[in-house]
Length: 335
Image (cartoon, rainbow, N blue to C red):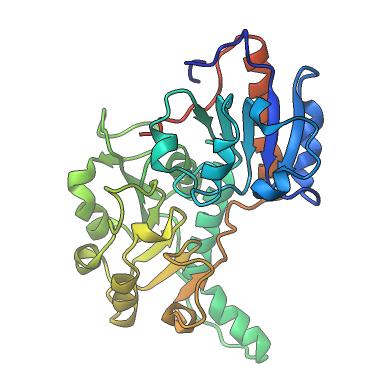
């Protein structure tokens, strides 16, 4: 929970613009939970759409609900909103929407959906672990070809999961892993204790390679920053266990894709489950498509109907809090 910071309650009336499709978005049904004093005056994916028959001028907007706005489209939109004080992102990752002027604007607070998608992402992680340990690809192939061939599978219990980025998402992954009786090691930026009620061992950034050396499954769940870009690289894979599976639910650029492909081709690691990529959509020319030991999903591990509904409900709750001079939930440190 964060403070209201610079929002002036006497002036904010929750005059809202929505950056997203004008229709057909199921989660918009949750907007019925907005306080009566809150009013949506414009909806659109870009400035042109926002200016189509707006109920009020954009220069009166104080609150922005962002579904699809990016660092490319937001600058000209925000230029038309001089009274804007608060942006809520329907997602948790902000790297695609933050740009210099927004980061350094002290008059605009940003909140996000931290915690809303964590359980869905953790479910994806455990599904990926099951996919490889139980060899689902082989089972599916045998079914398709009507082959009855018994083969040994691998246990999940007793294996070690290494979580790079031990925030809300990382902890959700750790909780599910513990339910499978896995050993949990984690890496976080600031370490207060060497373990907690979930993780058996918590390392600081200087011990990244300990994750490579110990983990059977590596989960990448840290945010993309200048410090984490290409964090997982040739050096990491050189230290990795040969049976290791890497699972990326963060951002594509946290893993050096060329180094990953090389590691997969040379069997430095056993496989990868990838929900995010350096370039999205993943180009047809990418060799990742052709690797049998890679599970690919189109950046939809957190794209669940229930989660998007919960994020909009969180926005509605924060609108109520603004109007009642209460603390906002999920204020983001823009730095």
